[in-house]
Image 1 (cartoon, one colour):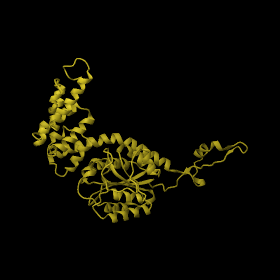
Image 2 (cartoon, one colour):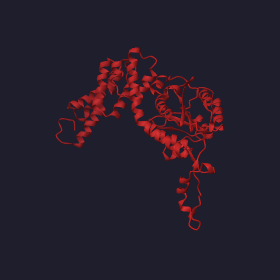
Image 3 (cartoon, rainbow, N blue to C red):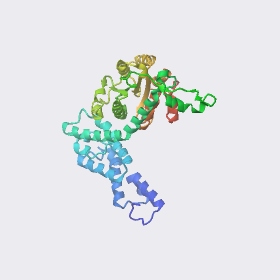
Image 4 (cartoon, one colour):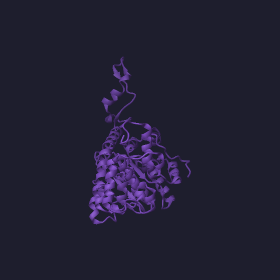
Length: 398
């Protein structure tokens, strides 16, 4: 308990305390007063953000950057990290914090999260010189945090899938893996002949020594609604680019196309090269991606977009059909973010599914397993169903 007038835990009093903190000044009638310094501090931080009185004016955080920095420090004192991120996101949306983000003393006080970084990136072209260094530090802090979390699972999933994909079940005699074949067929040992008769042969897939096992292209919509997806896709692309068995390309697009593959050694540079916002021309982006493809049957092309096409939808569908006919493994992710199923163009999504292309949203924690399933050429509709992911159906209508 944090309320000083309670000497023992009283569930009814705790409920009143929580309702008082939730309702703020409108809770006068519940018969409970906040007395501890902690509760009063929590009440002040919440009132700054959610008070109806302040919403009528310019908001509670517009006065000065030092006051904002103190408020940001207070919410980290009173709330766990998950709640801090929610409060920061609400402050960006409800109050006039975008202008204050241009001030270095404010950026230094903020706990990096995906929403904050998305906002910084959307303002990257107007951030003044004295703030750019601090803004990069904030973005780099989040990138390093996400890399630490995501790199291990992605690297392990891809390399494991590639290792298994290097074997096939109908090898030539010279490509047989005798140890694995014998172990897999021990149950077929024939005592009369004192030998094993293999029903299942396992061997190494033939490939040119200098070739990569897979070519992976991430084609990412950088319209404003896809900001979180751009951040996560850039980090995943950077990790995959470090794997010698995979050739990875990263293409960002709006109405123009930007190939940022050469920047994948530093995801922060990739993110500051993004142009969040603007229109969308998916067909043009896929046309560019097709020009990068040299081995269609060994290429995985992941389109990350909400499919709100600003260009010609028929041209987009013709390009997609061309890629599929050439043997490219094409996957559409409606979002790569933690925010659940997004708004998307149902009509185009359904037509893509009719062409055999799986369409669904994916959270970052599931992306490594998705890549492993794609490399092993599993049925991604079945994979998604096993993961509890809702996929778009061909008959889906708006």
